[in-house]
Image 1 (cartoon, rainbow, N blue to C red):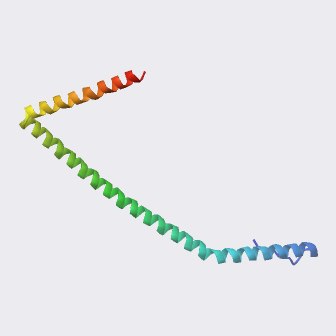
Image 2 (cartoon, rainbow, N blue to C red; image 1 turned 90 degrees about the horizontal axis):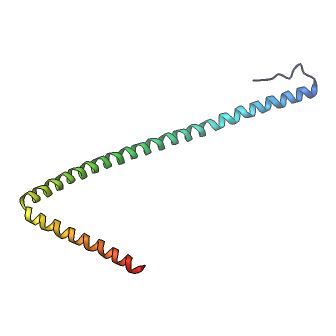
Image 3 (cartoon, rainbow, N blue to C red; image 1 turned 180 degrees about the horizontal axis):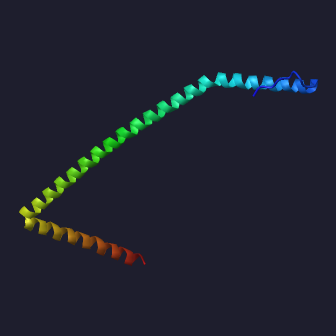
Length: 117
């Protein structure tokens, strides 16, 4: 918004000229700042693109790793079932030994707590 100082009293005219000069200075500053703003915006867009690309790559790697882990889990589960089916006596012995060890741990924990009282 430009002001004309032609038909104004002298003190008001000085203010109008000063206001006009201020408007021009603002316009000049905004024009001078525009390239810097554009460069900053372009850099910000590039950074967002880089981050987005990196996060996409990480997500794809995680998905592949999760698939491999699921496949390995299924393979181990199948192998365990097959081993248990082929060796039922060994599995019964392993289960009996595991149960015995667990009962020892539980009972030793109770006796330790009981003696501390």
